[in-house]
Length: 136
Image (tube, rainbow, N blue to C red; front, side, top):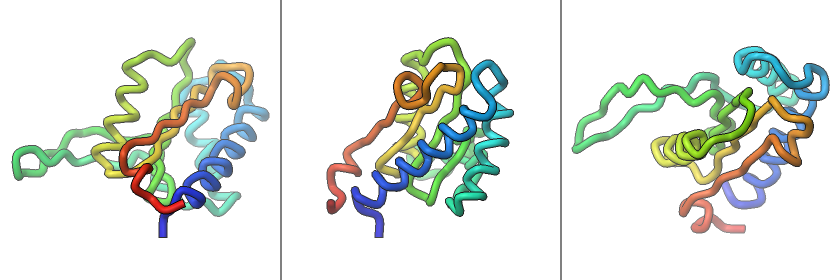
């Protein structure tokens, strides 16, 4: 059962995995490199995920192939979007919020590996109304 405690603990584990990748690789590489290494780190930590999760859009009673892909979908409850950019832009934030809505999940993490410290300036967590309706 997914609850707030489960999600917060899972976020902590994901953040730790991102820190480990960043610690070993440092900033300045392509997003795809960080994604491959993070996938390996998630495997080592026994965190279930799917990579390049296909996002289908339901529009006026039909399902559309949107060709959208979430970088990582963790434990079927957290969307993880990876970046390696100079700075996070509002469009990146809009992207993660939309993915959360389309995948019907309460939490999303936006990780920018092009930073000096993941926790201080490389990670942004997002929640939506689904989070507020969960039990503690």
